[in-house]
Amino acid sequence: MSIAGTTVVATDLDGTLLRSDLTISAPTRSMLRHLDETGIRHVIVTGRTASNCVPFFRSLRYRGLAVCGQGAQVYDVDRDILLSQAVLDRTAAQAFVARLAGRVGRLRLAVVTSGQGSEFLVTPGFSRGDERVLFPFRLVKDDDLWNRTIDKVLLRHDVLTDSELVAEAGVCCGPGLKVTHASPGIVELLPSGFDKATGLSQVCAALGAAPREVVAFGDMPNDIPMLTWAGHAVAMANGHADLKAVADEIAPPNDQDGVATVLGRLLRERVPEPTEARDIG
Image: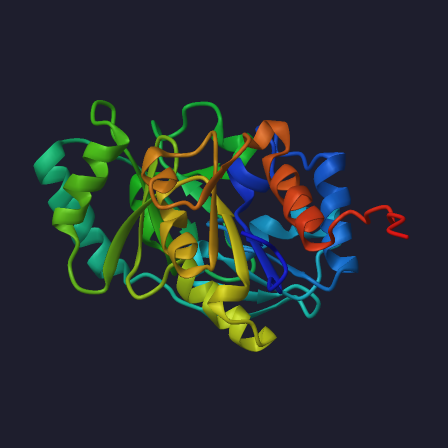
C-alpha cells in the first residue's frame, strides 16, 4: 500500500496512538506534524466521549472534527460543540441489564452520561484500580446510574471472559441496542446504528474524502467497522486477534510508536529517494 492517494489518516486513541501510560511520544507528534505539512488530515476516532478527549486534543493541538463515543458523537474541536450525538434509551438499557443478569449472574456496572459535561459513573465493585487513570470517575449507588441521560453502559463480570460476556450480552440486546468490545476487561452497551465507521464516514464526507483515500489504525474489535471501511487497515501488534484478522498490515505495538513507524514508511514510499544521475555518454 502506498500513501500516494491518501487524504485522511484515522487513528484510535487508547492502545493505538497513545502509549500505555496515556502519553503521546515525540516521534508520534513529529509524524503527525509531518502529515499536516503534506496536506493529509489526521482524524481521531475513539470510544472516549468528546469531553474526555479534550486533554488529548489540547496536547496534540488537534483541529477540526473528531469521532467520539464509538461513532455516536461527531465533535467540532475548534468550536467546542457536538455536531451530532446519539443517546441510549435508559428503559431499554435497564431491561437489557436485567435480562443479562438473569443469564450470567451479578454484573459490575458503570455508565457514561451524555453531553459535553459527561461523567463516568461507576457502582461499587466495578473498579479494578485502573479506571481512574483511563477515565476519571465518580462512585455512585446502583440506583443512581439511571438518573441522567446516558450514552452507554459499561459491563464487567467476575468470571466470564470478555468474549463470553460479549456473546451473552449480544443475545440480550433488544431493538435499538448493540454491544461492542472496546477495552480489555470492559464490554459496552450502545445505541444501535452507530459505530466508528459511521462516524468516520460522516467526517470524511465533510472533508471530501472517499474510503479508498483513508488509512485507519486500531487495536480492538470496536475498530473493526472502521478498518473494514477504510482503504487500508492497520492493526496494532498489541491489538485483539479479531482485529488483526481483518487488517491489511500489523504495526508495531503502541508502546513502540507503531503508528509513527507505519506512517513514516508510507510517507517515504510516497516520495521516493532521489537517485544519482548516471553518465551514459
